[in-house]
Length: 400
Image (cartoon, rainbow, N blue to C red; front, top):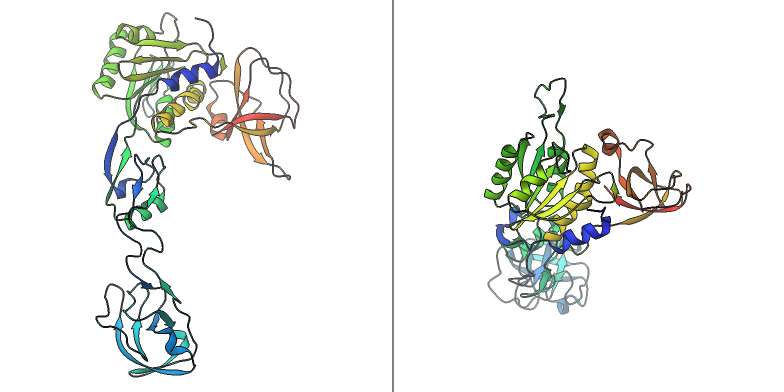
């Protein structure tokens, strides 16, 4: 199979993204979830004319000539209501949030009064409606206030609560199974032999899945053995995951077994071998209803491919209409001519004195150098056969 363009591979992958189901969850659990339907208000807010300040509910016409003396006939704190109708030259002590008594049409703030037992003297006049929040000022019953597809943030949850929604319908989180393969791997904390290394892909790829809204099942490490790999894949199938992501073993070498095992288990191979650096041996397919992504084993390659393919796939499943965002910057350093593969260069991102974004690539771009990726804030995109570029030239980048 010839090398596939990155854009074509991503387009094909996203085109086949499965629709995710929905679930009702308590409002307390909804932070960071995606709303599955428009949310309408179940009541007016406020539900009654309410006082915006501590003071006295009055008739504005009674304060036409200042100062004026009014009789205080009651008190109404928030959560209570004055039972009678206000008459001329009467006032009711009122507190913020309390319902405005019938017959009152303004609030005289307490700073503008002098109190003398059952009477007060108004020192300033008021206008009709002053310091009164009318019913429905914020929103009215049946208003659509949060639209389908919204990524729910703290303010949305507060709004949904005031709309009287104890639970809401959200998109189910895609379930992603992560599998590392290779005899050379041991988990952090274990003692590697002289020929082994510490596995890192499980942790980095899982985090990349979680940060865009997925639930993760870590399948651990499968040795370079067909039965061991098949057992792990069966575990993912039994868990009904939406995406199976493996790392390592997806090429066609003598010890690269993942692709063969998946085909034997019924995977429909979509593509593998992408014209990109890092990450040429990237595989995609479908096993039943499960999307399959086979990432390279090199840590940086695995992470970059997860950013470029897995994260957009998860975002698309969660209804994001722009699952991958490409931005523009200027180069902070010169770059040599590129070859036939599209390159993704680890780089820092800064702002120059004119307010422009500046992407500066690292000198070392080896696909096993994780320390550089941890310091990077973006990936500079270098198209195939891109000509040499000078410092200050424009470039595309993906923000990390």
